Image (cartoon, rainbow, N blue to C red; front, side):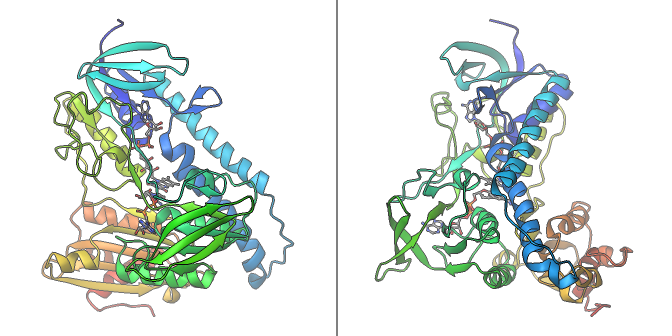
Length: 472
Ligand code: FAD
Ligand code: NAD
């Protein structure tokens, strides 16, 4: 057996690769094991780089430019004859992914992380077995193990994913042609982002959602506005319904749909169906159970809130444990755990994890929603400002949406920010930073913001908390 590692990371996604790089930076002898295969070579980057955040954003960007040129440029004096070249758009996606995946291997080299291509299995708290694609096995001795095995698609009983007619997000990224009709099951982040991509490229998109609202967890007022905007863009919604059966033929799929509350079933048909009802933690073949690592009722590896599992020396980060399934949350946990292993003060502030839906307009939030504050009995004040009253938004013809800031009624400390509008994902960060510093709505309102920028809408919403909006 070779030298003993300080850290062996199992899984090379944002949780795992950031943990490994940070551990390497801190001088720990580190290995990272990844089983994802891209044309015979190891593909680090996890779901995020390979089949998640990055390819979806490449297609969201390209499809938005296509729709702008086709439908919106004429209104600002640009006449363009626009034609879709889907293979080239898909090449843009592939090239973007390839470059970033290679970037992770480069960072491993730079930070002296040993890469291993294969499936990692915990043999004991100090041994990890790696099985390569050809079946060869080797055992790594280590002082610490970080579980970073991520998540996988939640299946829907009665609707079997074949990645051709009935696809998961992975298949929905690589469709070779634009479906005439796409049915999306689940009005969450994946459904609305990838539904938007294919709608922009010409598909009729219908979304079937179990609940009576879209995007559960998003501030209720924002979600209502979001649904209105998406409907205006041409997406249709069937809320309060569940799909119970799917029948696939050469030409399409027929779904049996029932009201969630019970009632008469009906059938709907589409060329392609996207199943996106959530993701679930992935620990298949990991040996976590055999090693005595505790897993909760939802299959998530349990932690003490600082990445430690119940087994000393075994840590966990990312989608496979509790908390939102977001790349930046996984990344922060990876860095924090590496720092804790190195004896430093690694920490994640779970109260301030921004989230963004990359539709057009974007939807972004940080901190508590109004619903959460009400449920917790917290007295709060709210300030709201519409983009239609923001000068920059008007110059770029992006008038949909608003910024809402929620602040403690007594102390004025900012408790949450919810934005639907242009660049919402970027705008929300000034509020996140203010919140990290314990800032008040007055702090944001009194900070000079450049004119004309979209950031002024954030400032005006902060001013709105004290009823002193200046622009209208
Ligand atoms: P993963 O990225 O899932 O990585 C885990 C890795 O571990 C995988 O590569 C897997 O092959 C490997 N692995 C598993 N078991 C083993 C084993 N035993 N041995 C070796 N390797 C193993 N989040 C955002 O924040 N922003 C977005 O815009 C966004 N968009 C998304 C779009 C889509 C379509 C999807 C599906 C997800 C998106 N996400 C987004 C979520 C994001 O991808 C995840 O939160 C993130 O990838 C989690 O990182 P992770 O490291 O925990 O797990
Ligand atoms: P989600 O949890 O965002 O949404 C799933 C939706 O499906 C919910 O609205 C839920 O009510 C609905 N649903 C559940 N069961 C159903 C059923 N039987 N019939 C109809 N509807 C049903 O999940 P997702 O969209 O699959 O995304 C998975 C994860 O990936 C999320 O946790 C998300 O954080 C992450 N992700 C993030 C981003 C981003 O940050 N921009 C993008 C994509 C994915």
